[in-house]
Length: 224
Image (cartoon, rainbow, N blue to C red):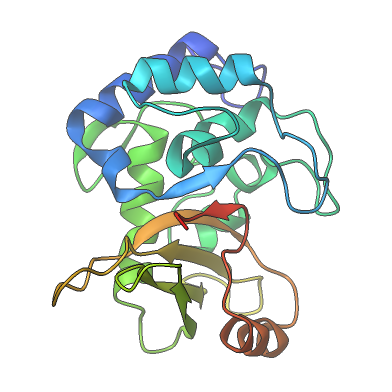
């Protein structure tokens, strides 16, 4: 039995990672680095990184891997403080869940229920809550978009940040961020999640900078 508010149960997490991979949930997430853009150090070590990706059957080389495994699961094991607190706070404290219209404990490390039925994993619940806002932002959401261009003619990716508050309008909104795979031919690839967290900063400044200076953000990684 996992204690969501005590020490994270790594065996429980590895079991969830296997289930998420088998069900195709990890394919809805992009790539991320474990090295935080603010601290400049890994948020957790290679042992945890390797075990998560091995359990999910995802080929990855530290520090770059699947953003869902890193953010939703790996961050629970981070002991590195950031200017905004610990990485696990977003899942543990409930502000993000409430901003996405879910109960405060929806993203804890425990089995739960969501649109897919009982027994869901934390990553399933985060994906189910965040991805619709990323791909189809509600009318009241604040949205920024930018094209990320690589070195090849077909290496163009759409990136999007969405600020949405489905609960208390006076509380911090959820920031949901994602990047699409590189567009090829006439196909516009759907956005993949990279991260989500409660945002308490200046929304106008964030969105203006996001669109004026296109770049991978919040530890996202894209192919050159």
